[in-house]
Image 1: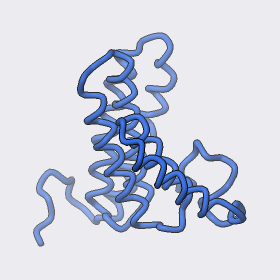
Image 2: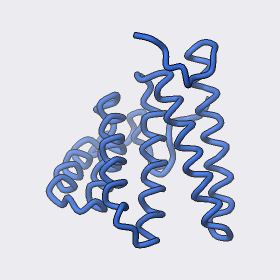
Image 3: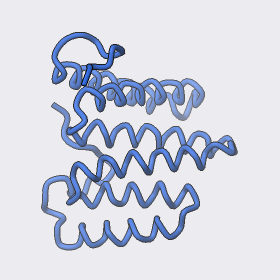
Image 4: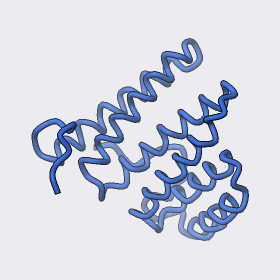
Length: 160
């Protein structure tokens, strides 16, 4: 399989880390602007999503970039929802599919299952949301001390 020509040259691991760091930086900038300049914050979240996409392409077996891409799409879906856009539901569905992909890489992670449930909830798919929520609860019950299941549900994996 050929390497995607849109990726920078160099080792895939280096590409992965560089794109992940850039995405994290863009998210931090977006969060600092979200209450004062939502349009600019949204543009930064979109750029972060592109970086997470490139990181995910560089290492498809790494769940962190896969999930951060899902989170970027969740932020975009939320922004579309705030604007009353008819495309919000489609974006929530895209985020659900990406979160499922991240879950497939770490199927013991209840936090990821809950993210999938959230996406399905906001996309209007109540049955799927309920099923994923039940799976998440099952995985999280008694497993709070397992890696990836800690009390910081809003945070991703540790940065390197």
